[in-house]
Length: 185
Image (cartoon, rainbow, N blue to C red; front, side):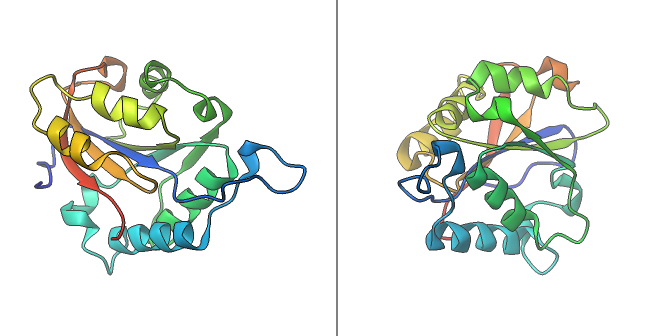
């Protein structure tokens, strides 16, 4: 897929990287950490986004201006690794509500984003992100076939151009998939 034109809103959906199957002793699912593979994949994605990388074909102005992330340990670690190579990383807002959010809930959270921000990255979990990846797509978008064929594995990144003037206008069926990136990067 080609990168989008610089105008319009961009939504970057990032599923956390690969995690341990079990939480730490005495811990909860919220505390599961990344595996070695998870670290590798998130670092590789971050290297692409950094100044020495290819930015996955996106113009630097199209990189996220803010990040919304679940508070789960695996999402926090993913965000830190993905943003580590950026010269001027965007601000990150950690939201406990993203841990159990529905696709509709995430769309609702986007309404709170400042309209000065053109591109937002949201970092979270499946099955919600797989469902959101489809529901945000316009009904006739050919990206549906690509998502269906590749799924939304750990550390998958889907980038959408949104048909929305303001973040509050984002709704199901308003996006066009402009890039789907999955490990290995």
